[in-house]
Structure formats: structure tokens, C-alpha cells
Amino acid sequence: MTKFAPSWLQLREDADAAARATELIEPVRAFLAGREEVVIRDLGCGTGSLGRWLAVRLPGRQRWILHDRDADLLTHALSRTSRPEHALDGSEVTVVTEQRDITEFRAEDFAGTSLVAASALLDLLTAEEMSRLAEACVEAGCGVLFTLSVSGRVVLSPKDKFDIEVSDAFNAHQRRVTDGRWLLGPDAVDVAFGVFERLGATVRRAPSPWRLGADQAALTAEWLTGWVGAACEQRPELAADGDAYLRWRLAQCAAGELDAVIQHEDLLVVPA
Image (cartoon, rainbow, N blue to C red):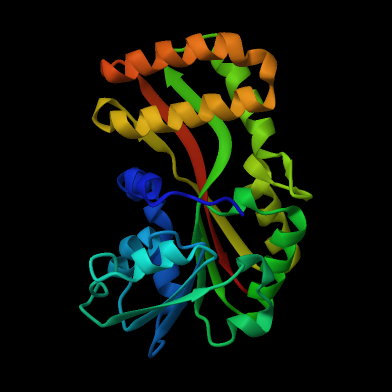
């Protein structure tokens, strides 16, 4: 799985928080209602930003179990300043961590779990891994909230004819084969939706776009550099034009003249 720097995860946290689909919160509350303690497993937790956002929006006592392969990120997520302080109604929120490969979860690993959650994870999975994870969640009777999965749609303003070439090459890069794994990339939400529906679960999806303007120039510049870089890695013939294009877009960004909408989707699953 891809390794992410804490600085990148911290840079994107505010944009993530603003983008998450709040219309899914009430159905999550309804699914979790009446439990003495809600147990939430955060897969690929990074620095714990999903817990900081979600815990204060859910009532009742909560136990968060944070999973990641990166021990340094788990240490960061468990620090005093990173943990959510309390639930919506002031109830206690406890946080523990467990270092492991999230692609290896089976139904028995989710015993006693109320909700399986993740942020910006699905595009890094293969179709087989997605199917196994969905089967494990449904068999265990867990609710599922997968947030901020990339959909492959980007709109920049002002527009440029080169935007489409970069976008198409980037999406192909997201679907690449790496270490023998064929990643889902922007197809992830469609695949997950179909798998959960076939398993008999109720599935709901909602848009969660990043909307970046002049006040998020640092994030926009970092995202833009990675976006163009991945596109040129996928299609090296774009490199010459891509370098000039990136310099131009970064200059627009620095001047506060670039707006970007990067589409994501959130997925809520309630087992039958």
C-alpha cells in the first residue's frame, strides 16, 4: 500500500473535513442508535483525521480502533493532540491502535465492531481486496462508511485544453498495476457499490468534492504537482508540455487565480 507523509495528511485535513458528505451522518447515527458502546475501526487511519471529524458528530460512548501499516502514523494518531476529545453528547471516546495490513481483514476480525470506516482508501485496493473486505463487513454485520474516494473527475478554472490529457493520464496511473496488484483507482466506488449490493446490503453514495480556491493555495499546489507528476509518469510523452503546464498552473495558484474542484464520493453501507 502507498505510504503517505504526515505533512501531506495534515495539509489536506481541512479540505477533507469541508468535503465529507454530512447528509450521511444522520443515517449513521440511526444505525448505531441504542448501543451501549460504539466500536469503530478506522482502516488506513493515517494521522486519525476521520476520527477527529466523526467522533464529535456521533453521540454515546465510543471506542476507536485505528489500523495502519505505518507505525509512525499510528504514533501520531495516538498522540494527545490528535485524539478526538469527546462524542457529540460529551460521552467518552477512547482510542487504541493496531498495526496491520488492512487487506487481510476477515469477518472474525470484525467481531463486536459497530462501524468500519475509512478515508481515501478504496482507490488503493484491488477488486479482489475490495470484495474480501465487503464480504467480511457484511458477514460480521458491521455498518460501513467509506469517505473521500476519488472519482477521477477534476474541473479547473480557468480551463485549458491540456487539462483533459492530464486527467486521463492521471486516472490511468491510478488504475496501474503495482507489485502485481491492479488498483481500482477512480473505479473503486462503482466496484464497492456493486459488491455490497450483491451481498444484500443497503448502499448509499454521496458526493464529497474538494473545492479549492485562493485560501487553499498550499494544498492546491501540492495536489497539482502530484497530479501532473503522476500523469507524466504514466505517459512520459506528456513530460515536455506537462512541465510548462505545471509551472503555469502553479503561478496561477500562487497568484490566487486558480480554482479546482476534485470530485470524491462517500459510501454508506448498512447490512441487511
